[in-house]
Amino acid sequence: MDDALTEIEFLARSENRVAVLQHLAEDRYTRGELGEVTGASQATLGRVIEDFTDRSWIRYDGSKYVATATGRLVAESATHLLQTLETETKLREIIDYLPTHAMDFDLECLADAKIIVPTQTRPTAPLQEVLELMGTAAHLRVFSHAFNEKSIAVVAEEVQRGAQTFEGVLSASAVTAIAENNTLWERLQTLAAAEDADLRVRTDGVPLAATIADKTVILLLRDKHGVVQASLESQNDHVYQWAVETHEHYRRTAVPFDSGQFSDSATSSPW
Image (cartoon, rainbow, N blue to C red; front, top):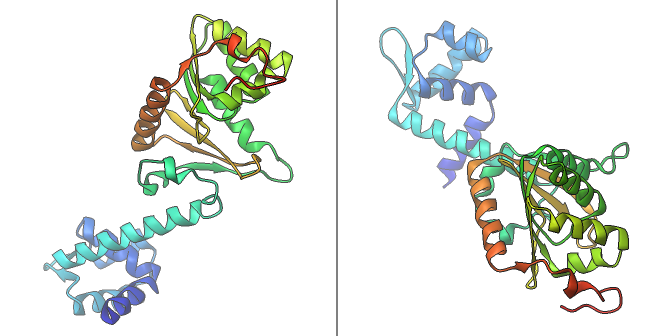
């Protein structure tokens, strides 16, 4: 273990070492070519090449340098570790809000995710990002424990003008909350009655707020008080497949929207 940690420390102390090994694991290079692709000085490259040769991570084939089998192994492992740590660093500030218990995919799938958090100048930035994507989707699928006024307005407008098909699964509590506002309630009923809309209600609840806008998955992340802390947007295939399967599961276990079930929700909940 100590020897392995020593080697990790050796490699991590220099970006040039990592870059040289990654390049040589992929192709053969002369020393001059390595300088061009890495930006390292020839003096630095001389030391790196000597250190790697001593470890049998690279070899010289008479004209160029190339990684050995063990060198490729180290390069692959180092690259994977770097990617993992980059993803962890990216998710660190929102990990407390991620519904990881309901996410059936590796967190590394979020490496290229776009994360937007509120700022002093744009406190509603996460929600605005979601609304923009919702407004441009041809096919919109939603499963959520909340559906706010702006979301209803955007979806209703797009569906009514024939620009969007909508499949929504909302928790009973979300629908109850909407029913307590006459304006929102009328909008939701109009949306549910549209030919290109399918709205269902899940009495067992929906533990997260997710939107599938065509091929893009968006998670709206809230804290324990229900305050939006971030939006996470991903086009990763595994994340998309998870979202589609999760939406279908909630849809199968939900019932068609029936406004009559919520007509008295302002005074008591039927659920």
